[in-house]
Image 1 (tube, one colour):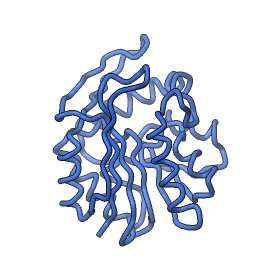
Image 2 (cartoon, helix red, strand yellow; image 1 turned 90 degrees about the horizontal axis):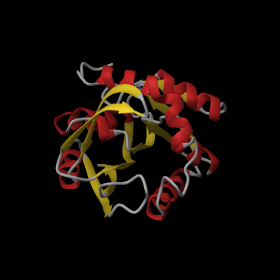
Image 3 (spheres, rainbow, N blue to C red; image 1 turned 45 degrees about the vertical axis):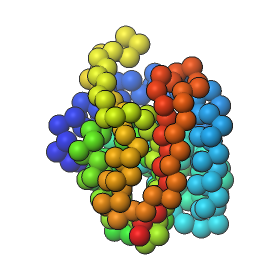
Length: 217
């Protein structure tokens, strides 16, 4: 694990709310949580690797994206910092592989992945710490490896949560600037292939949603 001062608080918050999260968000990709654009991007990612290639779901939570990709024939491993979340993932999707790790210290060998997805997993990483996460992704991806990121769009605003449905937490969320994310990806050796931002359209959304596809040069 890295020395990120917010990492322990994030892990503890998700450990405490893992069962609640799985009940409220679910353990599968669904049209109540993901809009049509979101699901189409995941379909595109699955299509890239359905005939071969190893993909990691980084910050996998209860295994929603990992299960989606596996159902499309993708070889996938789910990685999360929270043991509680991984327990939810194993209960829901026992046939998948999982490992403990954080974005800046992945338990993977150099050049061991063909692709990666960070589905709302960089939202707890402050902007200045994104560089370490993107460098780590570059380390574990093969040349031309693909990554898909989803996050709430903004200008780096920090939102602090102290309670989730009655459970005390200490959780910081960041609304990242898509242009800043693109610049930091480029600095880590990626070429941004596409960037889409949509307005909030689902009940649980209060900000724009951003999606970035990038390829390691």
